[in-house]
Image 1 (cartoon, rainbow, N blue to C red):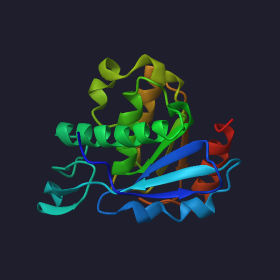
Image 2: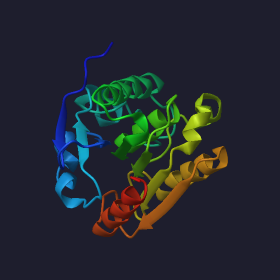
Image 3: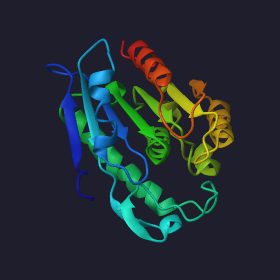
Image 4: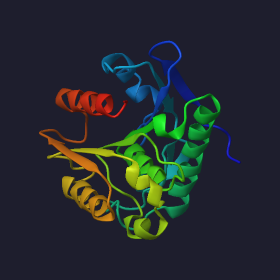
Length: 220
C-alpha cells in the first residue's frame, strides 16, 4: 500500500459534505491551485484537497526528477504512455477518496479535478471507480490509455458528469487531443460538457466562472 500523498487540505466552511480533490500539472505541487479555495463561490461548504504528485524522473525533461503523476517519454504525449505510472497515481488518488469516505464524505459527493497531467489522472481514475463520483473537472488535458477505456471502465461511472475545458492555442497538449478524448468519452456514454477558451496551456477567468457554475449545478 502506497503512503498517503502529502496534501493541502482546506475546508471552506464548517462540516463540509462535499470534497474536491484537485490535481496539479507536471512539475507543480499542491500549492498551484490552492488559491481556488477562496476564488470559487459555491453553494455549500467544501473540503478542498490539493495533493502533491510523487517525485519521479521525467524522460522528456532529460530524466530530471520532479513532481509528476506519470512519466512522459516523448513530445507526442499520447504515444508510448506510462501505463505503470498512470495506474500507480490512480491507486494513490483512490486512497485519498477512501480517506474522505471514512471521514464521512461518500464518493457521490467527491469531485476529482485536475489540470494537464492532473486532469488525465482525474479522468482515468474516475472511469475505474466501482462507486461513481460526483463529477470530474478535466482542464487542458486528455484521456490517457484511451484505447483501453471501453474494456476497463466501470459501467456505473456513466453517472459521473464530466467538464472538459481547453485553450484553443495550447501548444503543450493540443486542443485536438482534448477534443478527441471528449468525443471518445461521449461515445462511451458519458455526460460531458466541452468548453474552449482563447488561451494557451493555462486557466482563465472565464473558465473559472464556468467551473463555478458547473460545480454549483452538480452539488445538489
